[in-house]
Image: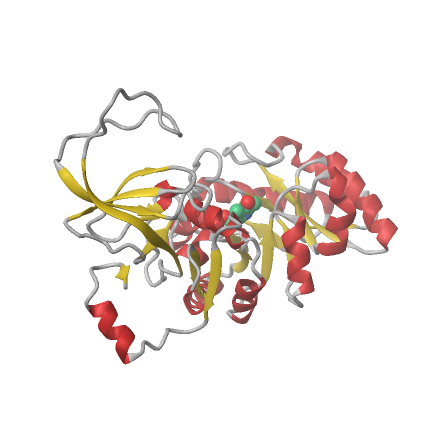
Length: 375
Ligand SMILES: *Cc1c(COP(=O)(O)O)cnc(C)c1O
């Protein structure tokens, strides 16, 4: 098998999605799955659809279009405010888009009329994280403008916290979103079918006694894919945190001194960290670099530490273990590492549907290798 490769365990992703759908449904909240860390991989979206999510969201029109072509029948939401230059594609490919700008709404309306096609709009409200969002005091005015535009349907409002500044979704901010929804309904005499409270960072709030109020949707990516909440990156009980694993190959293994010699200035990516002399240590050079992954986001096999990473090399201290040249090492990934690995043209993807049935020979080889090392 080629290396580096990302192993994608579809059965574990399905388990996480089914579990979250059940827990959210019990609170009257629907789940829009956000697949962007997999670049909208159609096989992942298909598994999520089968697990009962109510829609798929993607920030980019290219990945939405690919999902459409894959035959997915769930509603598709563009979760980044449309680029003015792409409104025609947005109307053609997305059922719904998240929006903040009146100028973009005007263009979407014109495109919808042009294509004789209605387009759903969710207005995003700024609740303090300072990324996308309409300031609450401007929401009514922008909604009034939207309601006058032909071809567009105001289907709801939403908010996004914890992405730019790590602002924690709270009962207070969710109550504010609820009251903004009821405020719009009263003011304009309409019903908003969707109030989308946020992303995976909303789960600690929801699971620790938060009252949804009018919040009836969450947009979840990391919780489904990695089984963690993004505020402190704690595992969510009952979910798999190992749906993805990156496998790479060792290309050099040597006992070398801890300290470099010669006069030291900058390395390829800045000043090297200060080192303590630990004498001669086993180290492994792995054919994996910053062109493949965010090295800081990798969890190394037990007993190994990261000494450095450059474009194409990972340098590991393997302690007392002399890893064989040609051996494969497996790494767990955080969100940032996953995103980079999925984006890299050098990382192959292996989809795994169900637990691999190990052969007798394979089992023996695994049993005789050190932790995390595949012969
Ligand atoms: C990425 C994103 C999400 C999903 O975030 P997770 O933390 O992965 O759950 C939800 N909403 C918007 C607008 C996003 O950009």
